[in-house]
Length: 376
Image (cartoon, rainbow, N blue to C red; front, side):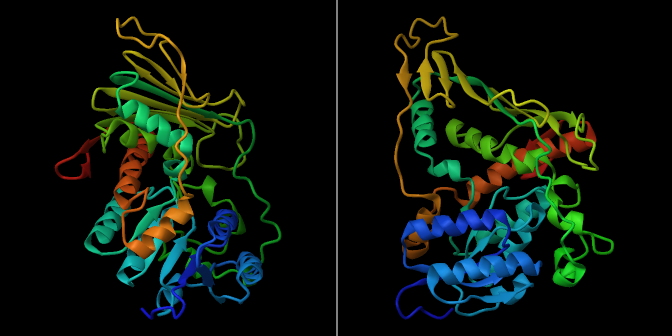
């Protein structure tokens, strides 16, 4: 790797869809000496749009490619941002660290357990800095809630209820303007994982198909289940059971529009529910023997407790301001410290998500062997 003459962190962007737009804006707001110098996407339209935005932001046009391997081979790229479809994250990450690149990799860390374990081990063998895009780890109220629970404010936590609800055909996108000649379909097939001829819908609506995601477990549950190992100081679940299906939006999707999973940690049961069928509101409540922490409303009360040491006066969850998730990554690239959402944190949420997804697929309870690091 060449040393930048002005100490600039030179980034490669792999994946130029909607999430990359948000990450580009975060990079600009971080006001760090960093710039994107190369972009990769299989679809020309997305790639060129993001390249134009990058040229406007940093004053130089980035190089473009449809193959991420070509970007990783660029000697002047110091680190990469991986914002590709879910099932590609582990392989690209493993190849990135093998190429000597630090990486910011979007969540979920993995939707297939063996892929996730492979990537986790690859990073652990390397000296690379990896930040996982579970950005609640950099959220002021989430850091405050973690501190409150770990300090025992609500006592021993035995149950957690998480819910997310929409009433929409979420993840539908227009794909009728996608032309085969504008897509490197072989690259999108990712070594044969997506068989068959060109399919514009699979390219644009990959969130709806089992070949490219494990559904809500990876698409959304990862955001919130990541809080469980963090807040509880318990890295891996013991068991997971899930039910769900396509109950309303019968639009050809294969992934659920109603989903509920129970994930059991040590002496604590976490439930995660999501529906695309009714906008019933969200819920993120942690039930302890001395009271209840309501993260959505930033309140801690003695509600539900009869313990003699229960919380008597309601309190507000402390907000602990920190630098942004992207700024934290860039700082850690410079000082070689562990980022806020480390590769260990990423693998931990992936274990829970993969267990939940596999339970839905098989209709069986899935367990985890902590000694062997294997699903049972």
